[in-house]
Structures are given as structure tokens and as C-alpha cells.
Length: 182
Image (cartoon, rainbow, N blue to C red; front, side, top):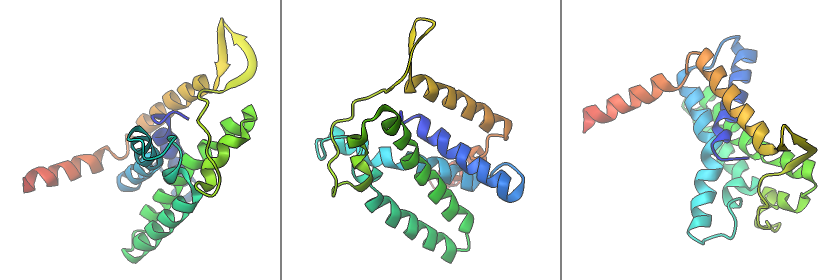
């Protein structure tokens, strides 16, 4: 999945949880945490790959051997601060990232590319990129995962807008506090 789509998927997953749990859109803080946590794997791995520290852009940040302890520590820290909602947001956001990277490989039969799940115990070959759906061409275009990701991106942004743009208030509050200190 393209890096820009992961925060949207994280938001959609957390928004679904908030509606199921409280019957309302997510609050600013947890929505922002879910979005940031959903992008964390790529924020860790893409720069490492670009710097030549690792061979591919899905290693450390995508590995369950890293993800599970990070989520556990976040959960415990949030619970101690009496902010369990933020621990849930980290778990849903980060978990959505890793889970959203799995179906494309399964559907295309590129099972070796699932090596990121237990990296470095399992090998992660070079990522082969956008996957075809095997549906042939539609209106002259090959049906690929990229098209579905574009639909998810647009639908997620529309959903976020309809929800009242949760997270924007938290960013404004944080920015205001930083400017006051500066």
C-alpha cells in the first residue's frame, strides 16, 4: 500500500471503532494519534532504506517483532496516564498499517514479500510494487491495487471531512502552545 494511504486507513479503522464504542466520530487527540501511528512503519522504514541501512522499505517498522512491543509499551503508558483511548488509537493505527500491507501480497501470490512480518527472522525480498487484480483492463486501464488505494484515499478523506475533520483541533492546539513557548 502506498504510504499516503496508510494514515487514511488508520483513520477509517479508528473512526469505525469510535462509532462502534461511543456512537460518534472520533475525538481530536485519538484521531490524530491513530493517523500518526498508521504512518509510523513507513516513517521508520523508508528513510532507513533510502540511507542504505536496510535493503528494502519494509523491515524494522513493519515487523511484528517491533510492532508488538511498541504497541504494548504505548498501551501501558497510555493506561498509566489514564488515556486508554490513546493506547487504543496507537494499536488500531499501527495495526492497520501492517494488516493493510498483507492482502495485496496474498491476492497476487507474492507470499515471499510477507517476510516483513517477522523480519529479520524471515527474509524480505525486494518489493515488486503495484499488484494487478487479474481482472484485465477496465476502460483501457489495468485493474491494479493502485486504483483501489485511490478509492480508499478519496473515500477516507470524505469520511474524515464529514466527521468534522477530527485531529485538526489537536494540531492547532499543539501548534499554538509551541508558538507561545517560542
